[in-house]
Amino acid sequence: MDTQFEEMRQQMETLKKKLEKQEIVNEHFLRKSMRKNISKINRRYIWLMVLALLTIPYAYYVFIIMMGYSLTFWVATAVFMLICCGYTYWNGKDLGDNHLMEDNLVEVRRKVSLAKKRDSDWLMYGIPMLVAWLAFFAYEVYAKEGKDEMMPLLLGGGLGGIIGGVIGLRMHFKTQSEYREVLDQIEELNL
Amino acid sequence: MTTLEKQFAQTVAEHKSTIYTVCYMFSKDADEVNDLFQEVLVNLWKGYEGFEHRSDIKTWVYRVSLNTCISQERKKKRNTAARLSMDINLFEDRDEDTRQVDMLHKRISRLQPFDRAIVLLWLENLSYEEIGMIVGISTKNVSVRLFRIKEQLKNMSND
Image (cartoon, rainbow over all chains, first blue to last red):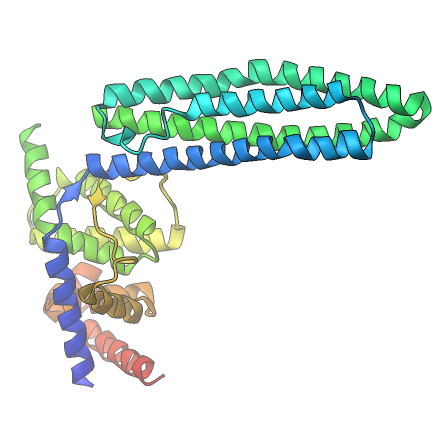
């Protein structure tokens, strides 16, 4: 059994040797953590863009083929989705650069702050556009189904809208807090 | 940097592998090691000014590191951002040395935290007296506990 303890001692020696070669890092470690946060945001943006693009053919199938709503409504939906997609791309384009975290911190802070502001500003445009789209949707339902049939559809659509809105807002606040974390880390590096 | 800060940085640099080893043996993943490492450094810094060199600095570093890790084991508190650590990931690296280290980690982490502390110090070739001083028990108690821990380790390898 002494062999087992001898082996453990040797393993401990190996660990010590490995660790002795290491330096305590601060900046490198923080940059790594910042990169991790930024790539999380990037991945989320990519998913949102894919989702927005896929919504266009899906909306055609549901609104035109299944429900028989007007082509104008589908075009409005497609334009709304394209705007969402374009804005998300524009917002995140500077963050997609793999070398972003190797830049000087002033530049990184400028880009991250700008992306955070644009992400936050989106609510100013996105919410009114969503309200306008919902009003258009209500009008389409009214025009196609008539007053008596429109309530169940509007309730279903409204509930879906609320659930989607809550998920969207949660994602928005999560992204904002990740941006804030990156900016805090930049501040720490500048201390 | 003040003189005290310079002395502290020097102390940490000299004992970094001791601190990291303790943190590693009390962690389950790379994030937890980094959190603990950060926490130990904070606690070392808090006590550094008051450290009166009555005991050996290595003994003191061990005591603070083990106390921090054992109390964190109870609290399981997690920091979101660690500011200082080492750029090594013993949980994910795949070389032969890391595989050996991982075997040691697996054996030790099956022990209770207090026993983990004792066996760690024993593996570092510290005398029973030094181990007793660090963990706050008598030399005789260290010897009894180590005997039991060795039995436990033997039984584990028979499993």
